[in-house]
Image 1 (cartoon, rainbow, N blue to C red):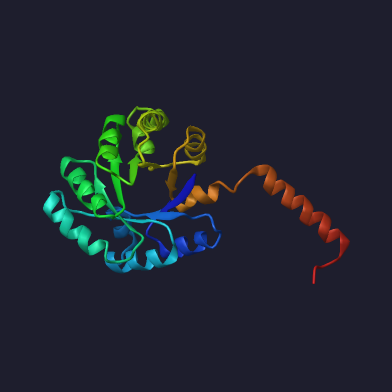
Image 2: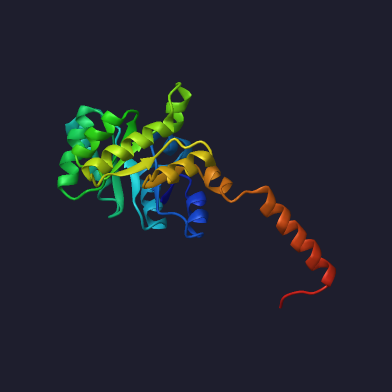
Length: 217
């Protein structure tokens, strides 16, 4: 499963990219606003930090203006994936862009039927929001299972990009189900490293090493 980080914080992206774990980045208007930086400038910087797809979202709601914004965004770098909402105009834009060879991430997916529509429109990625789904009394991981089954039934190429991940269990379940990508905040990626027994083991090793009075080098 690919790991994307969901942030516009370039320092976090650079630090995580150095681990070799990052396969891409997702951003959205809220994350860009949080960064306090110019949209095009920060997107260009992010694209230079990772080789994989960087999702940059349009803010227009109509197809014609989405296409105008997408034209600007895809000129930033070759690894830009245009992010569009799961609406009729968003899928029109998806179809137009993917036919032209541009990667498209269809976002704000909350049903398997919506995911089916995005795949038929040629989406590169579909982004079901599991955390928000859970927040509203639904089972986010059940949604991922349904989408995986449907995509496998018809051999769709669209990759399932699990979004709105809140904790490591979401990551584990996504991997068990067979999702293609998990995008998560930096804190969740860092949380995957954590285990009380790992910390305890390191503490014990260091204590024993200190008793030897030795050093390496």
